[in-house]
Length: 383
Image 1 (cartoon, one colour):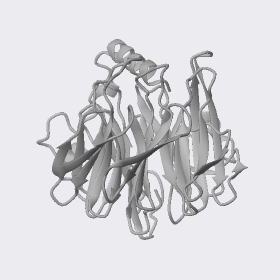
Image 2 (tube, rainbow, N blue to C red; image 1 turned 30 degrees about the horizontal axis):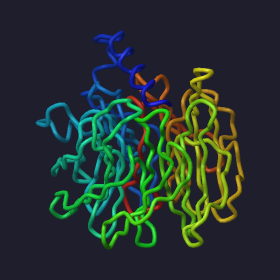
Image 3 (spheres, one colour; image 1 turned 180 degrees about the vertical axis):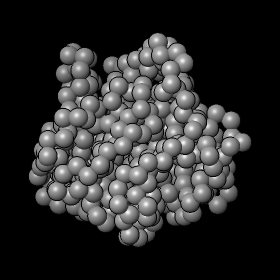
């Protein structure tokens, strides 16, 4: 969805809702959703973004050993932390024994024990967005400046380099305007510059940073308003563009890192992607400022052949219940597919679990705007 429109909708809805019951987010709640499952994957964390400005980001957990889903785990583990986890959960990752949550409007990366969720520290980064890890360091994109829509925005973004041993920022590298997703391949960090605050003057480049020198060495034109990048195991970088919400649609672009050229545009819109083996799973709720509505779609791309192999991986018709498919994850062993529904963006969302055959196994209520996943255990490094 258009970030400015999303912000305005959230503020209006919160004002209208007043002290409704859904605003109470501090009581953990556990429900059984499935049978126990015994693999090397112990569980899955779900970071709920929460409505912007309402300090409602929460962390849920699915325990595979019991089949239980628990909402809002962070508050119980950290009763002395004011305002709980913070305002707008934007990304989630595990490195070593620690869980890292990027909390956008609280300007911090929250660092926890990955098993107990006990807070170990936090790193202050303004308007932080996404995180990746490599050889002892965490790399975090930052818009650097305040949340404001301005075609003449002057503040360049940067990537912060965090020493995971000391939990301190040790370096910064300037990139383009409003950098979002990033990935690391062949000794280089690829950063999606969005220019999302500069409507209609969007950015259209990937910044390329040398891991060794931590300096920007190149910018690659791709498409406007870039959102995310995912490197596959065949030397292709999959780059998501949001488009302009009017005439230029969201799309996924395949860029060959070895030949340094664009391979193709897939003509597939994307809100969220997840790489599993040679399959890129995609969900989209493409917002249009012309129709003032979302166009929903699902797809699977074969990353080896660079072909769309499915446009309907939900096979039992239950996708009709999903209002806004906002995020997706795939279990690294069972290949179960998880689709997060943001619904109206201001009330609790829903998580749907599908088998690899596309048939619904279960669904459960989440926090507001379920959006980011990470698996706990072995063999979980696919994303």
